[in-house]
Amino acid sequence: MRENENDLSKLPINVTPRFYCNSEHSYIIVGSLGGLGLEFSQWLIGRKCHKLILSSSRGIKNQYQAFKIKYFKSFGVEVVVSTSNILIEAGCEQLIKTAITLGPVGEIFNFAAVIRDAEFENHTIEDFNKSLAPKALATKFLHRLSLKYCPKLKYFVGYSSVMYGRGYSGLPAKVIQWGPFGDVGLLADVELNQRKKLNFESPMQSLRSFLEQHDILLRHPEPIVACTVAVKKHTKSDTKKSFIDMLMEILNIEDRNSISMSSTFSQLGIDSLAGIEMQQMIEKEYNTNFGPNELRSLTIAELEAKINANINQQNRFFQTIEENISKN
Ligand SMILES: NC(=O)c1ccc[n+]([C@@H]2O[C@H](COP(=O)([O-])OP(=O)(O)OC[C@H]3O[C@@H](n4cnc5c(N)ncnc54)[C@H](OP(=O)(O)O)[C@@H]3O)[C@@H](O)[C@H]2O)c1
Image (cartoon, rainbow, N blue to C red):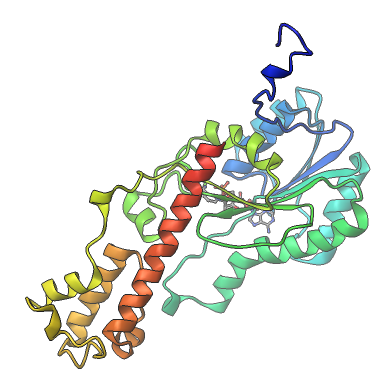
């Protein structure tokens, strides 16, 4: 509060924008009975949401979900659990029409996720589609139908991962890319080793932070936003060993000039076993993946260029995150 409201010298006042619901509108939460969806629904109620449509493929399956819904209703909130099949357009239409019976749809949040991770070679089209459908297909249908049925739509939010994406501006759409969460959800019970395999080894974000950050993320003008616990700042002493230095060390070569940059691994006498070792080393040191064929066919100069490009991209990514964090 300012002593004198006309005192311009005290302007601008720093504020954190807060997100609020319109209590007349209905809020569709897809994948709502999972770890984050359920807690987020409660957060929405704290932000004046009075009409919740909780979409789930299986409906209420455990005591905790039943307890939470009872708890939501104790605040006088209208809660409908919908098991309409969001993987088909007719199911999405049914979901939206159910929401409209409570009030015009204010927002749609898609938390749905099905994990079917596998090495690329072992992946099947069926499993890939099982993962893709509740995110991509359901989002496509809901988007299309929202244009027809939801004139009051303010936000259409997709929950994503820091691993993915770019998007479009100009639509009431937002994608939030998250790092891993430790308290609830699909990674809470996963061991560190397993998380490393999934490339989710960054520090775990707390549930409290997940909820609190929505004020900033939902009110942010960018359509794609990311939120994850900041990794340690890179310092000069963290600078990675260059690829060529690593190669010289592995091949026990002292004179840099004796490595021909236009040679491939096989021309340098690296057999397939040593090639696999090299592949793992590159992945570990530079977070860059090359398939065995690519590794065999690229010259040392081409490999170095690709690794450097990837390091630069990663550094830019972390720099952007750090800049955004310090801005906010
Ligand atoms: N947890 C993390 O660390 C983390 C990190 C990055 C991003 N995220 C993203 O955050 C979102 C929520 O994650 P979470 O950890 O809460 O996952 P979760 O606990 O596994 O919840 C996901 C929910 O999606 C629902 N679902 C799957 N298919 C559906 C369908 N066809 N129709 C309706 N609901 C469906 C499932 O409920 P039913 O079985 O009842 O259908 C499940 O409870 C996901 O989009 C995930 O990619 C999470």
